[in-house]
Structures are given as structure tokens and as C-alpha cells.
Image (cartoon, rainbow, N blue to C red):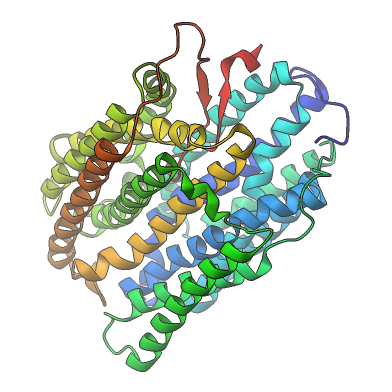
Length: 494
């Protein structure tokens, strides 16, 4: 419930709101894609093995996925603008620490702080728009937020690759600082809003248990296969993670204000869709991580060229996501959600051709194009299905849970895929070994996507068809690294 009068889209207050929210979420969008490009350079500077590079990614995903649901709750209680600006300041301070990190350990710790800041920032960005604009202009505002957010996602790898090649990987974190200053200045003009009906109790116990569970299991998965790892510590971490996971389920089931309300899984459609999310986004996160490194290690690409290689995926997503969302509304989500992961699997199988001496035009481009087509078929229908599977007043919870599933999937995949594929130690200094391991990883990823498509075909049901003209078209706010955040009726666009 907004505490101030809602604003119009084309007004000065409306422009301030868009500047703050678009640039704020843009920082996170850039960081979600730019770090992969810099990993080989980071590894070289710190003499890190594959496990160290995994932690640079998983440290961020760990805190982000474990606390993102808490971030939304804090905004509802204490004020969305307030928590949003705290998140921006936190994220930028952590970015500065990343930029000046003297050791790999400090960098990983700073990345974990970044994830916590992102968990405060991301939920508030869209919530501010939804509560600040009048209903007739809300669709336009979210459309602007979505489109420009997609530009940030596309620019990230290119900008990051250029900075890494021209100066240093440290500058990919420095670019967040001037953006943060503009966001904080613009946020002064953003109206405050909160939800007076929100439960004032925050599930900190659930967040701590989630962090412990994910942290323990991730540590065991990454460090267990690493040469010279302390076996007792690995076993202890695995046991602590498993116990914390069980305790998390118990606490969430008994809590009167759970971070993850387990009753949402009483819907078979919701449960199956999140299972598909877990499998497909796990493959997505793991394969994109390894493909970025493989292009530089095995093919000798510069950081800039490796970043540019993914541009077709982003372009396809931006061009087709809204159309596939509309298609799923007309024919139901079952077919797109079944075919989409299968097409993604075909794209991953084509990546087996990417290795030493490969050509971008004949080997890399066809793979990323097919992969992008499959991803665009999957993302919007998946999110539409998640939101439609619960009551309307629980759409925010459904979207947050689905986002958390996507982040956790990437976290686990980045931890599991490299050692399973034999990519441990200093493998990224050995082009032949890395190329061979990459081929194993993409075949595993293809199998995961295929399983996701089969699960969707068996478990997803199409809703009862409505009469023509009754169901509204939906505008999807889709990101490359996670499911779309929400769907907005076109009638709200005015």
C-alpha cells in the first residue's frame, strides 16, 4: 500500500523513479553477466584453481539466493525506498571492496557481501514501480524498466570484456560506483511506500538456516574433489549443510511467518514448474559459466570477444520473450515448456563442437542461436505458469520463490558441474583438458534440459481455455540470468 499519492508516467516524479529503479537493478544485471568474462584474468592474477573461480560466482549466488525473500519482506515492513537505498549503498560498498581485493579470499568475501546487498536491492526495484505509479501507467513504467534492464544485461559482457582487455578486471566492479551515486541522488525523489498489513516479524531463523544449508553443501561440492582438500572439513560441511536443510524445512513448516511458505507447493502445477526451473536453470548457470571460460582458454578469445559471443542470446531473448509469453497464453504453457528445454538441449549438444581451432561462425554462433531460441521458448511461459498456479494475492511470493529456485539452481550447478566433468585444480591453464571437460559438462547440461522438458510434458497442465478476448495479454519482465519477475496485464498499460 503506497504511503503517498501515485504518480503519472511522463511526469518529472515518474522520471526520477524510473532513473533510480532502472539504474539500481541495472547494476545487478551488469554484475550477473560481467563477472564470467573476467574469471580467467582473476584466476591468473590470484594464481587460483577452478575451485577458486567457482567460489567467485557461488559466493555471490549463495547470499543472494538465501536472503532475497527476506529482502522483499524488509521493504514491505520498513519502507521500500529505504531498503532499496540501503541495498544500493551496500552493493556499491561491496563492489569497491571487490575492486581493491588483495587476495582471492577477500574477493570471495566481498562477492558474498554483494549478494546480500543485491537481495535488498532487487525486490525493491520492481516493488517501487508497482506502488508508485497509477494503475493506468504501471504497464508503461514496467515496460521501460524491462527494456532498459535488458540493455544492461546485453551491455554487461561487452563492457566487462573491454575493461578487462584494456585495463583490468578490477574495473568491472568500479563501474558500479558512479551508477550508485546517480541512483542514490535519484532515490531522494522517490516516494516512500510500505505495506501496513505486512507481518512485522521477519524469518531470520529461516534465512540463517538457508545460508548454512547452501553454504555447507556448496563447500562440500566444490572443495571435496579439489586436490589437497581437508576431508574431515568437507565431511563436516556436508553434514552441517544437510542438517541445516532439514531444520530449515521444519522451521518453515512450523513458523507463523515463514520466509518460504511451504503451502504454496500444495499446487502440483507450482511444484512441477519449480522443479523444471531447478533442472533447466541449473544447466543454464553451469554451462554459461564454463562456456565463457572455455572460449578464452581453448579458443584463445579475448575477454571482449568472449563477452560479445553471447550477444545473440540476449537479442533473441529481448525479441521473443513477450511473444512466447503470448503464445503460451493462447495454446497453454505445456507445449512451450516441453519444447523449449529440448531446444536448449540441442543448443548445448552443438556446443560439443566448440573446442581448440573452432570457428565462431560455424561452431559457436549456431550453438548460441539454437540455445537462445530454446531459452526464449522456456522463460516467459515458465513464469506465467508459476504465477497462474497460485492465488492472485500470492503472486509476489510465487515470483520470489521461483527466483530463489533459479538462483539456487545456478549455485549448485556451478559447484557440481566442473568436478563432475573433471575440471579441477589448474585445468583452465590446460586448453586440451579444459576443452574435453567442457564437452562432458555440456552433455550433462543437455541431459538436464531434456529431463526438464520431459518433466514439463508429463507434469504441466494447460488451463481451461477461455473465450477469445477474455484473457489479457501479459507484459513479461524477463532477465537472462533468472526467470521473469512478474507479468502485468496489458490493460494496465493504458
